[in-house]
Image 1 (cartoon, rainbow, N blue to C red):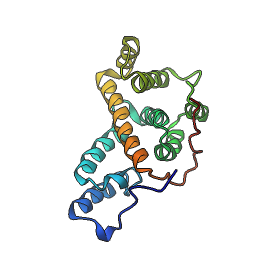
Image 2 (image 1 turned 180 degrees about the vertical axis):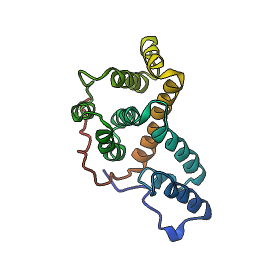
Image 3 (image 1 turned 60 degrees about the vertical axis):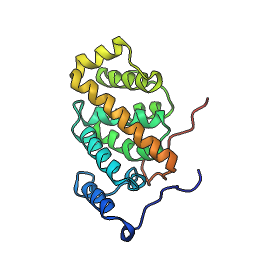
Length: 188
């Protein structure tokens, strides 16, 4: 991959709007201006709105942290997004997603023997990302398990992390150091 198109901006060069947007992230649960937000700093208002949505979806969604992390990683795989994978794979492991599950997702495979809640999230995310829609059976499974709020939050997680993936893939944002192996290239 070639050079980062939107590298970090030295703090001394930040506008007042950039400073305020960055400070909101630093003061929040993330505690730092992380890789996904570095390219977005060029558009402070977009950054502010996006990070607020992401803070809700990541930390307080109706499906809980473990399943949110699973959805994030499925989205990262669909977009071959190394930054999100590097950040969220270790978090998903700590949250209780099996290492074998992550290995299968990294290879673009549906993990066998998923617990029912993880299978519902996986299948919903894959259908939404690949088909740009969700069939009735998959929809009903998610709504039965997590309610309509859970279904909407799951859609939001897919959309939010697809946005971040698009931004970082276009900007060529480099992945941070991580305990996670980088996503492999998929055939086809």
